[in-house]
Image 1 (cartoon, rainbow over the protein chains, first blue to last red):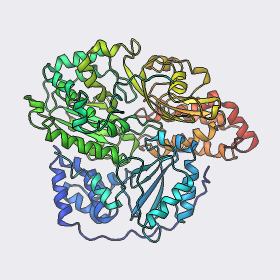
Image 2 (image 1 turned 90 degrees about the vertical axis):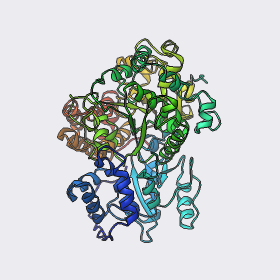
Image 3 (image 1 turned 180 degrees about the vertical axis):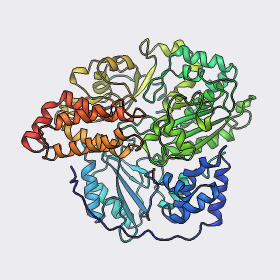
Image 4 (image 1 turned 45 degrees about the horizontal axis):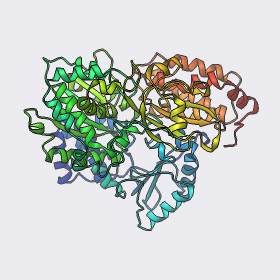
Length: 202
Length: 422
């Protein structure tokens, strides 16, 4: 198991971000109109902030607060509750490794360590080239495919240490391999936009 | 190899079953058309007669839940709990990926039965592919006149809105889910009042699991007696069992409730990997107490698993073979609860943290002789002392592993480290 020693790491400062685009604000208005009470659109709106700014920025949260009539503190209280809202810039590719028991029995923890080593990045740290962020996550609900690695929330199942390393190499070379199901992962900002459900009917 | 009894998984092998065309070719939306000819009360009575119990873990009778909705207060809401996150569970994800229209049909029938004009699907954010499948299927259903104004040509109108979560296990707890859907932190609400009277936006609300709703069209189409041909008297029907961990063929398997655990593990999943002996398993996800090889003849139904000292939960069987370390597994489960505790109640928030620390030091060679007593003590101070069922679930792996595998803990402490190679 991983060592639990206290490590003090100096986090890089969270960069400032410009005002949200007219497009994003219009999408937010659309989402607010989808629910009987506009506040229900808060999570989707935070996804839109992340889509434009690369993370849930302070500036973005303020604008969302203005639209919903809530204070910046109220917005931050919600944003910090959910792990998919990132509080600092995230890499183009978010690598999430499940290490819960079914995946651990199949080597998930080893894969997670190996990836961190290969990238020289600690948990939730982004590589200097801005390409990768690696994180250890809880059960991804695909235990039949253990161990599971997600790239921007697309599943690569029955992954091995070698497969995980070659996946990084492919992504680095600009080739996105086919996941176990569904389409190839898009870059993280596009994924955040999709997660806002703004394009969904009705 | 044991034969499955495919009901909700019936279309898993069929071609393009995830599209409207593929779905209707195989009898899809016939249950909805039949339902629209019935009165809401007739539907509720039929689901009650079928004895369908919630598949999300608690096993509450679905028809009874629907019957609690007061008729005089409008609007009412239906919310589909698609925030699957219980470790070891992967049935709802597969149902959404492979047969999203079946879920939409179940939602439409349930919404009609409780006279809701608005339904929400709260889908786990990390389920990107499942979310897209739902998004596409919902759009198809609107285009085909199944959703929107005049559902399937009737006078009934229904909107179904897909809402993605953002990474929080606790939002699978129904009142936390409602908080989250209202744009708040996902922390459970005090009950009573229950969602049936004070749910989403304080209005009457039914929250049902994906597998539960996916079962509904089959009951309406084929009748209560047809459904009751499977299962036990108190747990009728079929259920998806998620088998993972140390087995030859991990996967989702559908069988009658009440079938022996042994048959699920050996007959469906090909037995323990590499011909090893089984040491322990969870019958319903990590929040249900671990059982051992002595319990393999127990039936996979709510009553039999309770009699064996655990809970059926989501039907998620995680198998641990003889060479798996129970301390390591328990520590990893506890790390999950430490991370996912919503922080509302002190016993759960602090207790899960402490348990995780103690388990970590035992696994890593710094265990103390008093640690087993400490684990039990802390667990007993969480159990029954927090707001929702999360705390009770969190201590399940600890109390059950200390009960059945005390020797392993003692050995870790005596040898100052983990005795297992794996």
